[in-house]
Image 1 (cartoon, rainbow, N blue to C red):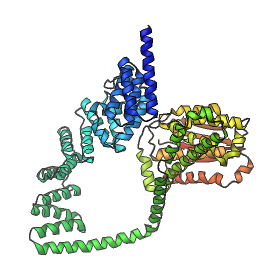
Image 2 (cartoon, rainbow, N blue to C red):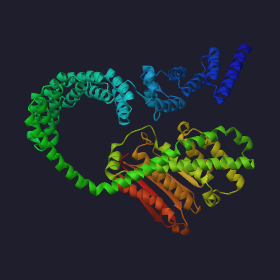
Image 3 (spheres, one colour):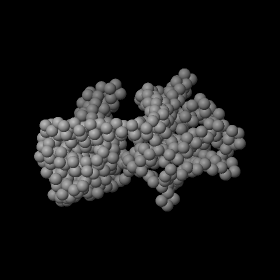
Image 4 (tube, one colour):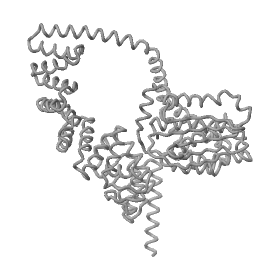
Length: 593
């Protein structure tokens, strides 16, 4: 028994020393200590997990994955199995963050294949407790989402996993080929397209992509054979004719190129591009006069087209120029802001140890509050720049992006928590909201405010938001600020943080909550509710107001801007401002999310 206790003491001592090394950024020394601890006890989940975290910090990702893999085994979890339950939240969060860091870098290609798959599997557990990774549908959905987010390397792995389960799925072979095509791996694209054509030999979309792949590899003879097959299926298809004509030209068969392009010219007699191609082929084929005649025609038609385009575009130039200038200004502001908010948050985190001991000290109290106020200001500017980008997009682009629905890994709870974090930090630390604090915080006193600020700093503001459970922020508000009541009855998942749905909903919620805090008369709590009513999703924010607050012009400007954005979409979304006696209600209804 004494021996076991002695070993445990040695392990704890090694871990404490390792943590000290981590704080000093002496990561390799910390790794050696965790390895010694694991030599004494290799069944410690905590040791394996923290070892993995350190490897992530120093960007040794294969070693990180190996350590995390060992941690999962201790939880009776095998990522290569088809039945996985209850992935530890901290592992899911860390791997999700790690995935975002490496998928566009050289590190991704260095990972073992099983670790690449592990990223995907773990990511599936962020919003659920169980998935069956032996189902074709699971991998199809993951691959489709990866394509939408232009994460082609992940899509390739995911389509391959789907095809291992069902190799007779022609559509998935085509999608795999398209993904290889996007990353310019035309040899693998051709292999995938041919697999698809074995199942569906007359699929014109696959044949067309196959022909293009051969052309990119300068295998024009094979491209020609492919395009001829296409024209047997669709003899008058202009794209197939054009591609065949180009393939003949690249293969130096100028007579055939002229013949095919002449067919195209019969369909579009004023197409200057076709005239150029035929004229060029005639000149190379030593038929100079014919070539020059056609090129002169092409020049004439081009001039006519240019004048028409110029006439149409001049009407739009001023508006487009203004939008470009606005977009450039917002882009420049964002670059200037850089990672300022994160630097301030990290500074607060580094100072976190001093909060317990020195927070009540007058100078320390002022310094911490100034930093927290600066963080909320930076975060607000960053958010407003995101929302401004919605404004400068034209109606067509905005509507297309709304209908496209790019999926991601964020829940509605995450969106609420992000909004609350920003608004509550403004409420607690901004000097401009002093009157609102004194009004809304029950039994207000400097000591009460100090305790709230300290609690929020320690529990919420200094934590890495991506690793923080959204419910923790919502619970903190419900527990510490009786002036705000929150109910969320529908946990939507699959939102993309950079997508139009997320940004627009976030804009509405944030502006609504801030207005409620700023203009409430505090006679009753501010009530925030999110729930589903049939096929519709409904958000409500209700606050009591005084007659005086209605006189402030800025109480309406933010909400009017939100209404303008919604009008640009003009579909699936309704935002209403309603006054009922002394209650002010903001209501958001969405039917396409």
